[in-house]
Length: 216
Image (cartoon, rainbow, N blue to C red; front, side, top):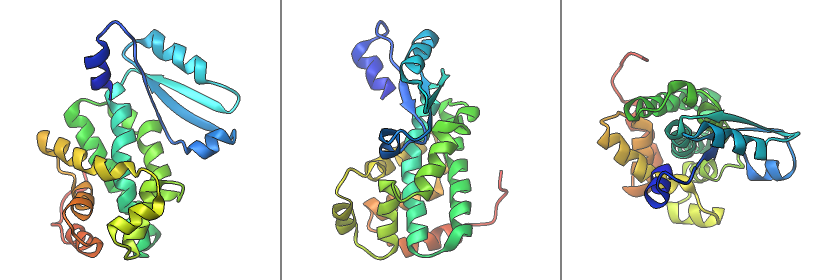
């Protein structure tokens, strides 16, 4: 979205992006929350942080606009994957492994596109990833849960009744992966389930059947 803002508004109007591990209901309820606001204009980032900062809202600043957006985007795709594994009752071990390897995918894409690793290890990266992959308030996770339990895609989306960001994002993430020649096997399998008619069972098999390789 920062690219769109730049194209439409030019360089004269400052812009910022806000992201992090936040469920709207908890924010509205006044529960403690932390976020990151990023802008290429340091003064504007600080101004926005001061506007949002409060007794139960802690806001950090960053100049890594790309990294903050990537973290807040790719995690939606990975949350669908986490939901699928939980819907298939694969247990906590599988969930933890998926989150960890999903983070590796996110960081590979970030490296290729020029985001900073410390951003992706922060609130808008690993923080948001953990939140959306582990809590059923996440619409993306709930879609994965339904698919993993055997509900067909159309019925699963209708059951949620709200926009599931990761559905369309999966297509865009895979386009970025192709453009930047980045290997993202988990995201690829989510894309195949959502847009190519693959079953969750086949997607899991494809991931588990991958060749042995170094973790790093």
